[in-house]
Image (tube, rainbow, N blue to C red; front, side, top):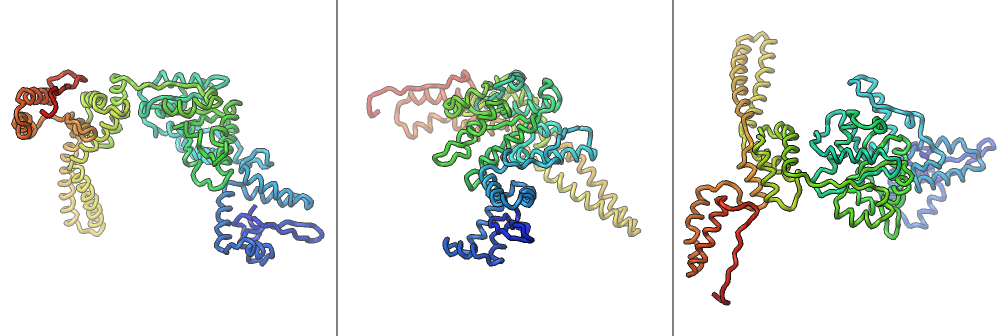
Length: 522
């Protein structure tokens, strides 16, 4: 309920007044109650020892807590209560505000505009589409606040194309099409493409390449961090989760995607309490009121999900294995144009193959295709930084625009001689831009760029041997003998093995091994 005086802050003090023989309740916020000089305020300040600034902070916090409530609706309901039950009604409303802001049993239902049906139509940029989108955003207030609509992004082409993973996507669709226990959980190592599978499902829904039951489904990627953020008091997190579940349940066509789903086990849990996100979701999942797609790693699944048998049985596992080298090459080929456009470089199939092979061989703590894509991305960034022509090209474009503006101004002022001079300069700069653009477009990513990135990450020398390094390798025995006196056979054998290894004359995945045997002290 808003304050009856300022109509801005939340009312926390209620005063009964008898007007024309009828008792009426007036709600006041803390600042307005102080201005009215009410005795309870002075008494409260004396007993609590609080300063006026403290009351102002409390008022701001209450306004933030109740910001999610439809305060005008609450005010209307309080005004229409009869006098005998007015105070009881107020207490009930305050209790419902702090125990669950969107409790469906509190007697307050959304307005017709919020609960009205809305359907997305992709018929162009007409006014009808915009109106429907506004209704949809108002209807799904919490999901739009704490989540991202992947299906809508897929409709507008904001999701990168998904290469491969047809088998996993088909398995997810099959689980979603079940009557019960229809909540898939994607289990795989970091970087193998678990979130990409959820995005691929959104693309299929946007293209209507799904079963009839999923035709009008909307997929929302829930941000648990945003849900937890800002929850200062007990009940706020539970209220947000309850509101999200109620919206998804009421819409009937929502699938919630939770990345790093193991975090729901401890999200929002207070000390000594058991009401975390997992326990809030369990009843809705058990009754089949909402559908959830989870994604987590195998270690986190065993550590958090498997230990909670009640939560585990509500999910159907979908194992997402690391793709093979051949599949990874095809995946990178399918998305290479995004990086070509972004970095203004050309990426050949041979460079992609080398990036996948070298990342698989030298980067052992990450997984394909993620590590190969990152290598391509950073190598493209390096090639882009070396392309100094891009800076010159941008400067010429700015100069060309300035000349055109000046030429138009000279023509308007009938200064045709100056306009002719500027026209000559314009043609000269356009010619330069044309030549420079061709040079910048012909920048190709090379295997050396890939090797440089791998070497920077792993400190393993994988670039071609340069002249300085070749000189060091040739005279390696001499350099070793400066520190080691004698031991000629051992030094020679070691130097030869290092030269063979660095020159590439060795079997792959079979490093050289040495054992130095001798008495102590030699």
